[in-house]
Length: 94
Image 1 (spheres, rainbow, N blue to C red):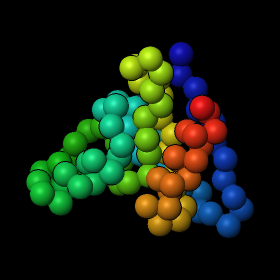
Image 2 (image 1 turned 180 degrees about the vertical axis):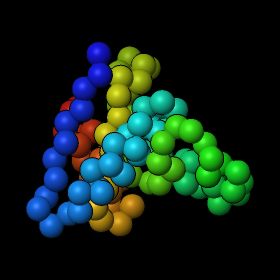
Image 3 (image 1 turned 180 degrees about the horizontal axis):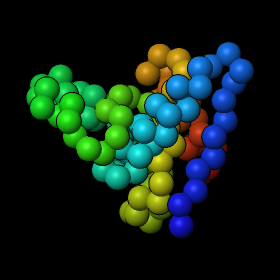
Image 4 (image 1 turned 30 degrees about the horizontal axis):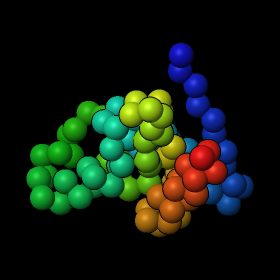
């Protein structure tokens, strides 16, 4: 089953929705924070062609009983702030 929830503040560009979904896809498929790949690209530029999604900080996987059940991605502010927002969302989930 595939589902997603999208929320956008009126002052944020519509492109941010696609970026946030791409970040979340990267995190969910790889079971890693998207920042892992942003850092990886700095050392190995060939990772820019990595097919998992958007390789920019701002997404974290949702883990339950050691299984990745999805991810949350945020875009619209600085990438490190995007990840802080994601972490707050995960903390709210418990």
